[in-house]
Amino acid sequence: MRKLFVSTLVALGCIALTACGNGGSSTSANQPANAGKQEAAASSEKITLKFGNTAGEEDIQTIALRDVAERLEKESNGRIVAEVYPSSSLGDTDDLTEQAMQGAAILTVSDPSRLASFVNDYGMLQMPYIFDDYSGLDKVMKTALYDEWKKQFADQGIWLITSNWFSGTRNFCLNKEVKNPEDLAGQRIRTIGNDLCTSSVNAMGAVATPMSWSEVYTSIQQKALDGAEVQTPSFYATRLWEVTKYINKTEHFQLIGSVVTGTKFRDSLSKEDQELVERVFREVGTEYQAKCIEMSDNYEKEMVEKYGVIINNDVNIQAFKDATAPVYAQLGYEDVKEELMKEMAQ
Image 1 (tube, rainbow, N blue to C red):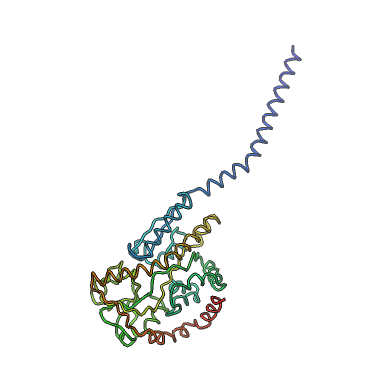
Image 2 (tube, rainbow, N blue to C red):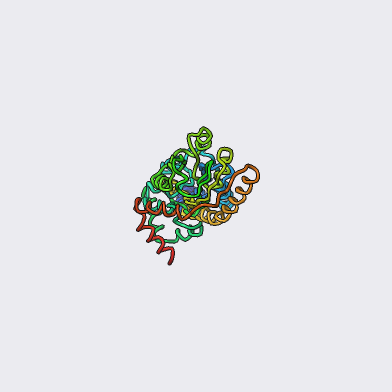
């Protein structure tokens, strides 16, 4: 009886040890599976972004940002959600760029002239009359020069997502007709506050006056400014027709939108999500280039018919080109311009 009892205990002990052994093997075998589940859970976590810009609600840029937000949410099955904050509600462009560089999940639409403070040669894309129209924007992004710029931005903490957004051609908008550079003499014209824009506007005969875009309407109204150089969609969205009546079609800048955020945020995304963000912004940029021209034409027609705005097409474009030509040498852009044009022609 005792022998039977001992044998039974030994048998039960073996079973228990076997069970423990199997349990250990099961746990070890399941570790990769659990890790995989954790990775899947991480990749399925909801990502909330903020798109901030200075343009108004009805500006083509804001409309395009809302389109991007919808597409990202749809293509990520609701995992990536973006909220759009127009009209400088999160700060001006430089503030937003700085926030993004610090790691905030904020994307904004800057421009080459502003970003030249990080990568000087990139600013050349915003030079007067560098392109005849928007058709060259997608070609720029296929050049080796552009790839190098993108790396240089990343080295400074900036993720250059795309550079093919187009917000329109900028014109001199004030309360007088402008045909030649001489007509801008003494006119205080708001422009972006960097060397590229101020040097170009001064070269065209005006007195370049940098200030925040949100202050322009009131400044013209109070006669602290005579006008602004601005693209039609922003002119319309800001209701500048209430304080200025002439849109003089100098078309000196093709306003290129550069979508940026910080590399800290980029690195928090999976490779797949990084590619998704770049692709959607690039696709929307291409699609909205022609839409911007169409919208500008419609806005101008409406402002002429409803608000008495005068569209002046009788402008000596060549005189403005000649006036701004020396600025390329002044800012050291002659060689990089030649290099870019060669690459785009290939």
